[in-house]
Length: 155
Image 1 (tube, one colour):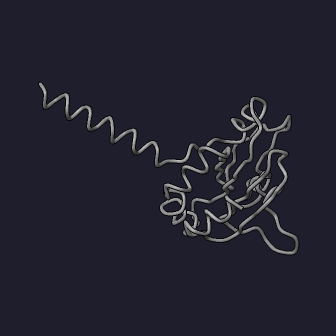
Image 2 (cartoon, rainbow, N blue to C red; image 1 turned 30 degrees about the horizontal axis):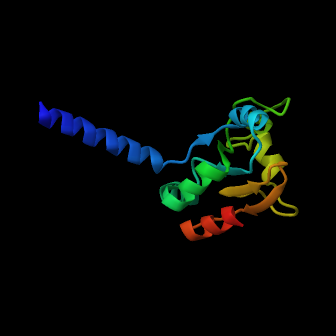
């Protein structure tokens, strides 16, 4: 019986440790609600399923304990598949992926609005840091190592 209790306790600690090493990602609709309650800076991560650098960042930079801790404590962290076909209601507006109706892998309106660059096509991954007023402070359109991610979110 003692052995069973020790095993259960050990497994519980493993679950807690695993949860502490994960970012508390939310979507734009949850962000809308959260911002009504408390304003704080926002980090937005746009990715695609086919993006090798996005997958590498998910495995490395977004698993780094300092990055996880900073994002969970100091920011709302939003993660969005840029090719999502879902309708998203945010800030009183409905956003869609109009491109998906005419082309495969169309980009959703939200990343097109927030992550587009002047005179350059949108590329992924995109990580954006926004202040409490939802103004873009920093933006990256490339693969970020853990160290680069720390620098980006800490400013």
